[in-house]
Image (tube, rainbow, N blue to C red; front, side, top):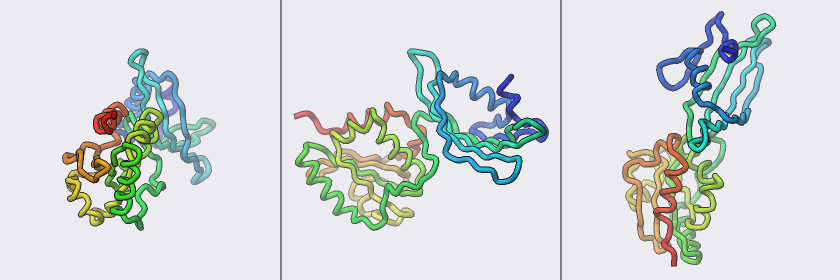
Length: 240
C-alpha cells in the first residue's frame, strides 16, 4: 500500500512497461514480485526541467528471490515526479523488463571505431593467438546497436572476463549501417539478415571453428550470463 501511494492519482500516473498491464497497480505488483533482497540503485540522470518537476533515470541491481535460487536481475527505469501540494508523486514511469545482464543506459562507448582495417586487426589477433594458444573471437556489430553494448558490458563481468582473456583474442568488426565489412561476414558465414551482434570463432591459423548462423546473440539483452559462459567454454581451445 505504501508503494502505491507514491503514484499520482490526479492526474493518473502514466506507466509504460513490457506487457499490456500498464497501470500503477501493475507496476507496484512488478516491484513487489521481484522479492528484492537487497537492491542497489545506480542513478544515471537527474534533472528539473521546470519548477515542481523532477526527472530521474536509474538502473536497479536486484537480488531477487530466496536462497538457493536467488538471482541477480537488472531493471532500468525513468521517472517523472511532480510536486502536488506538499507531496511528490510519480507522474510518468517508463521501465524495462527484468534482465539477467546489465543494460546500457547510453551507447556512448566507441566499441566499433569507424576507421579500423578489420582484416589487419584479424591478422594481428591471429598472430597473438598463435603465440598464446588462444582462438580468435570476432564480434560483428555497430555502435548504434543496443544489444552490441549489452554484450560488450557482459564480457566485462568478473565471471566472464577471465575466460575471455585466457582463451580468446577479441576483434570487433564494424558493419556500419549494414553496408560495411560484408565480405568478412560472408567469409566467416555470418548472415547479416539474422542480426547483430553476431560471433565467429577462428583458429589462430584463420580456419573457421564456428559461426552464428541463426542470430543466436541478436537479442543479447535477454540472455543469461550462464549462456554466454557456456558458449565461451564450448569453443575455447582444447587444453594441451
